[in-house]
Image 1: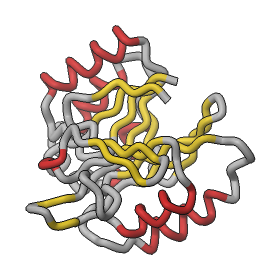
Image 2 (image 1 turned 180 degrees about the vertical axis):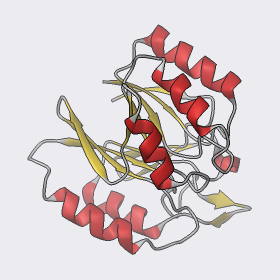
Image 3 (image 1 turned 90 degrees about the vertical axis):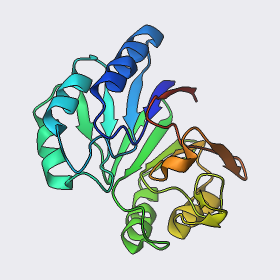
Length: 198
């Protein structure tokens, strides 16, 4: 399965145009956005419609810059962009675990409860791709001036479940960074987008 992942676009239609062109050229199965496609919600409709034009399934979660309900409502009006917060999207032996928002707390009880319940829906042998806005704690993806600022709840889930891949963002300083927790590859794809094969 081939993905184009991006995060923290913060309203750039020029960069989004390049992402759409790259996704078409590479014939990806999914475009995945880990949140903050806007700057405090500005031009949200225009950005979502531009993504929809790609004609490729898009999994979208909100960051700390988007209103969850507004983003969900806009995605429902499109053909290809799915608001995936708190959803599990299954595709050919993979399951996307999608959880948006946050990024400022080391513990997220909402994520902990949702992820625990969601694991009950996953059959044997299914590989998990975790999509969150907040990065896991204690990795190269969450360092700010050598201090970790990520989510301990997300790290705990990764340690327990061992997803194939965990995509996140939020901390712009770490755009493009990769790391690992045990067997799980971690990536902050940044605003320009990265092609990933899982």
